[in-house]
Amino acid sequence: MNTDGIEKIHNVWPLIVGEFFNHEHILIKDELINFFKEYEKKLPEGNEQLQDKNYVGNYNLYQSKYNLLAENENNKILKGVFKFIAKSILTMSKKANKKELENLKNNDPKFNVNINESWFIRYNKGGFILPHAHGNCSWCCVYYVQIGKDASKKNGSTFFLRPYLTNSLKEEFGGKYLKNNTAVFNAEEGKLLVWPNFLQHGSHPYQGNEDRIIISANSTIDLL
Image (cartoon, rainbow, N blue to C red; front, side, top):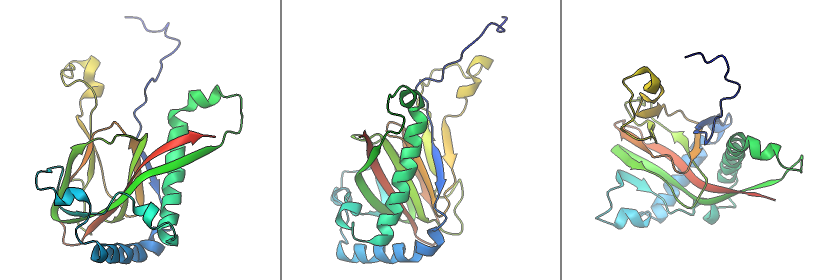
């Protein structure tokens, strides 16, 4: 078939996952870890899910309540991390909504990034989280505070599941672009991953000797 006449290929409903790096992480890592240790001492029971014996979404980890930033907004280190997170999320939103921005009459729009929920997780050896998606938000993220020296794609990495129908014909050439059912991202200290809320994701079991610690957040964005 002659395709020379094609004039446009539209990229609708783009699936994008962003990687951002906090270059100041090495300066704040120890203070973050100490803050999380003190938090866990004050609230050893963690969030409600950890107390639910029937909940099977995660295994062998400690998870804070979902209002981490709201309860500690005076912590300068933590506030700085979430400022970096909010800025990165806005960059992702602008990329995904490029056409909408081009149609705005205001050439200098203002935005407000709302961190609706925020929490940290400390993984024990063998800890993991099963695939899931987040509701009541637009963008989700994970920020790697500490990953352990032996972290790899097979040890504590974050993965995303292909959100297309599983019966797509991947064997013939037309469906080759759907051949991978998962996308796996290496954890790196100071790295932030951002993705749309509907994307199913989880973490591979972590078998390291050093605690794996991450920060997560759910967010929405208002056009002011």
